[in-house]
Length: 372
Image (tube, rainbow, N blue to C red; front, side, top):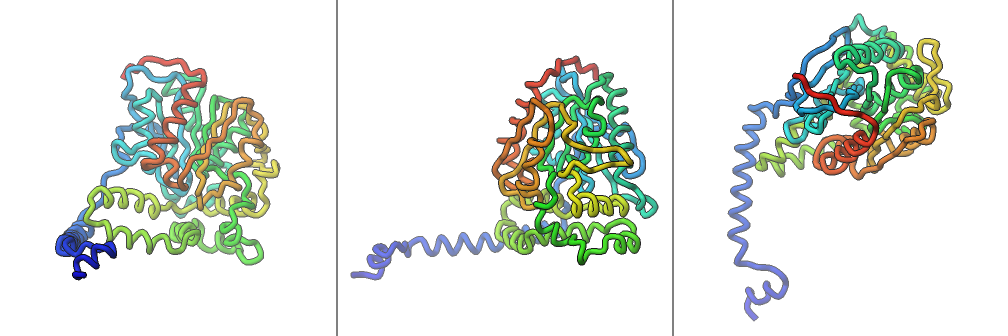
């Protein structure tokens, strides 16, 4: 039996070896060329959907995205971002932008976005966010849109702030509430619980010493949830650096993952003590500025989107939300994927965005003409 025949019987095709070697050599050359390009160029421009600033005060920015549909739904949408994230994560590049999707579907979209608190803003408290920033933005949205009702979308911890707002202003202008991967039972945030264990973590000393919580500390806590993920993603980048589409996607989501905002010191102190330690949101004993914030007071239609493999907000931390609110129209939707892919990327485009559109469109929101 010849070597070629033996190799064929063993499942090897020796005739393809030169072609495979040439392919690997060309790919290695492309890696070198593209590696230089990667270092010398910036990533894609994010957050480019046209918008106007309605209000800017302290760490708060309120944007209004310019409508593009001929008719828009009467009830405007106010997106409340998480205080560790920048708003562009929901407005990636065209075709992968949640904001762009909403505008094309005829929604009137506003966003409460955050900037890094300055050193003198270290005393910002939970009540500044819940009783001042959010109500102020709602009033601006009402005046700008000419409508009294507002649909609120809360992303991650922005969902927590939205729940606190909605529970305190239960008879207020919030018409509908949509939460993305929002924790309620903080005992189930297992690794965060370990980080902030009151036996070892002196939050008072930390806040009193450094003021605002540095973004590096927050980012490190996220990365410790999956210690090997950064190294693994960089290896994957090198293996695929010849692929322009892969590199574009990598740069977008890597910026999302690493561009973390610092947190105001007093605000962080309250998060640690009232939520992480005492679990007051879950127990119904939370108060903000002396006002009871019991989410069972919420009665508006509510949709909660959670991710099956969310490593930041595990499902056990998020699942009590729907049972605890008193809404008759309430729904939880679990989608495959993780914390990031739930709201951005192919999984979000195929699954979450259409689901959110069908749910929101099913609530009474008559259209009005776009006069722009």
